[in-house]
Amino acid sequence: MRIGIGFDLHRVVPMTALHSIPMGGVTIPAYFQIQAHSDGDVLLHALTDACLGALALGDIGQWFPDTSPENRGKPSAEFLQKVLREVNRLGWRVTHVDTNLFLEEPKIAPHSEAIRRNLATLLGVDLSQVSVKAKTMEGLGPIGHREAIAAQALVTLECLSK
Ligand code: MG
Image (cartoon, rainbow, N blue to C red; front, side):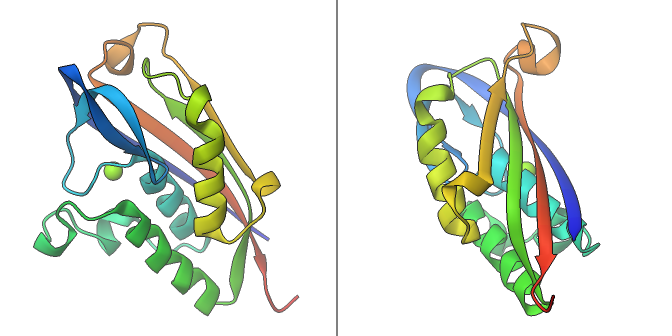
């Protein structure tokens, strides 16, 4: 078995009108925009890094440089899918994912089931193997001041040949 951890943070820009932001590959409404070279999906970025970390394959910045024009505005699901193909090629598969989201708003609870379902589909696992949790920073620090949002992920992999 292997275990990987991932973390990601992006700056956000407050908006007076509702915008759509990507979270775990699901579009949800928020009163901010995410600053990013790609689509800025912190949850998928953390998850991709966790998959890379589990097999010591480097990090998302090495795989998908933010200086590369081809990664501009790219759906982050494509990053995860490419890494999962490599995980499978090396003889491993994901068995469980646990995640934390850090943001003051919007509330994630109304969207958490849709996010779990999408992650389960992307990872090829059962819904019961995907956990999505969210918490605020209680108004403290850059996340609490609505200057950033962040996510962390933990994945476990099992060897297909065992
Ligand atoms: Mg990122």
